[in-house]
Every structure is written in C-alpha cells, then in structure tokens.
Amino acid sequence: MRGDFLIPVGGTVEPRESPEDAMVREVWEEMEVEVVAPVFLGALEDVFDYG
Image (cartoon, rainbow, N blue to C red):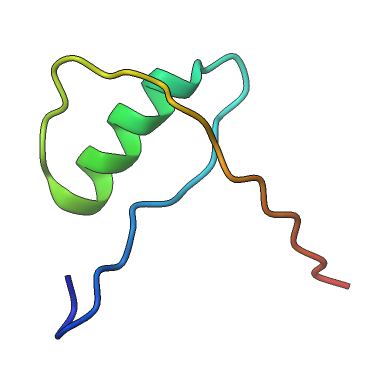
C-alpha cells in the first residue's frame, strides 16, 4: 500500500517453479509475509517488449 493506492504483488515464475511456489516467494520478497496455504486461482500474463 502506497498512500491511497494498493500495489499488487507481482513477479515472475522461475524455471521449474510452480505458480504456488512463485506466489509464496514473491509475497515474501515484496511484503515479508509468510503464505502458509497457497491456492492458485489464476494469473495475468504480461509480455514486455524491451526492444
């Protein structure tokens, strides 16, 4: 949360990492909150063009 805006946790799924493991890792890295019972509901795929 920054000011009046909620910034959702984001990140990437590393090679050979499950979506649940990626979510647990990203939440810890960005919020230092431990997720104990992750449930994968879906994902939003973004494709960035760095060219």
